[in-house]
Image (cartoon, rainbow, N blue to C red):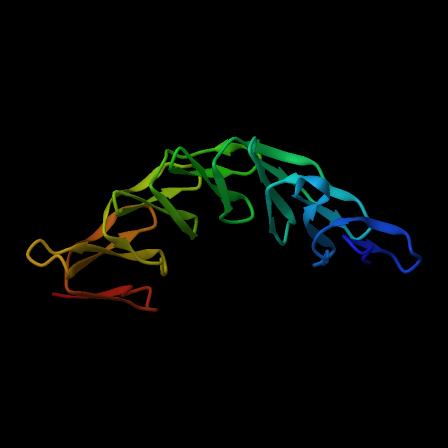
Length: 219
């Protein structure tokens, strides 16, 4: 509904679900609405279809992770993680936070990225970048060189590679720039445990679907 200045939501019986305090029309997605520009403070909150305030409307930004329906609410005091019933699961003082999976996030603090485990806190050292998670391994980098950590923040592979590709059957291709030609790479193989199976000395490596011969290397 629109009162001439702001938007709200009412039920079929004209019961108020969200008061007319929104400068943008609230839209529900799978039972929840992230409300933008609520009230006089130009803040964001979350309401359920029943009208329950899940996240109070005084945050600068809110991100939702579907599935478990976790809401990341951020303001100058830090980031707060709310569950779908409106309870604060955990909080962290940081400059920014990005969901990585249902249970993990990337937090930025003083220009460094940290692996954050929901309900527990920061579990890793600081890195220049944390990019993705594959098969229980988190891809990190320092000084433009890539490495791996596990879900507890322990180092699996140091940040010494120019690239680490996705894992396949427990192996990943690693890349190192050639000394004689910085625009060309040599390739090797690393296991999910961080063990170097093949040093970076091959011009081409192909991962196969054959567990008996998992990769083919060419000089």
